[in-house]
Length: 302
Image (cartoon, helix red, strand yellow):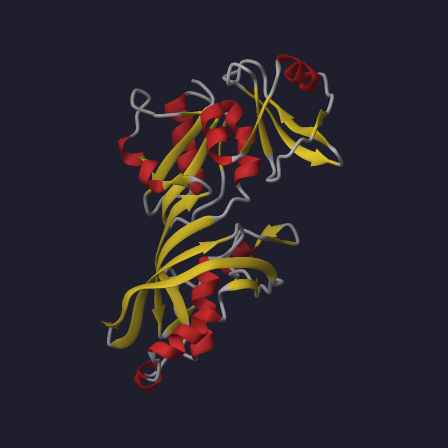
């Protein structure tokens, strides 16, 4: 199996680890990883690295992401999504008081550079244990706020009233473009809190990771070893990262641990390519030079 990326449209109910395990069987290799977890409830784009392309995942994890979400106003939940019990329920009067202007004002406060407290059921480690494990065992978890950037938080269509089990809610669909490390469940939670009615997610779909789109992804249910489509490691790197074209001597120097002159490249990391198009290394600036972060073997399927 050659090295490269596999774009998967993850179905609901699968963990990211489940997908990796499935791909190991299909690809016939243990060297499989992913570039950013999706919750079991969520669907959409999961970027999988095969063989040497697992080394690219480190650089992809930090790329911006785009999500489509359905947010329900009118209740807060333990997990900030529909997978747990309600903590508080809003009155019909409080829901009726939410105007378009109030919703937009609350959304605007969550746009741009913000400090976000991650969901308590996140995978963040607290004293060596995942936060979600501590919450599910009954412990109270308080996580520190961290900086994230919400580049777009837009309502799609019109908010709609919903009745479920005798309780009233308001649902709306949204598109969120954000930096890595943003918790969409926390946005739903904080929006509901700002409006005084509580909020949580009922659906989440990741549509974009960096330059990779779910439109190009394969359905996990359809995959076999015969139809698995792998995006070549060099093609994948050129699609996402700033390219640096190397001479044969440049390649030799990098493989011997030497540095290159930085030139004019601005965005990092930089993907360095041999004259024949092979991906040689990932580079970063160090003063006036470029140094390698990782160097790939000549045969990247090894």
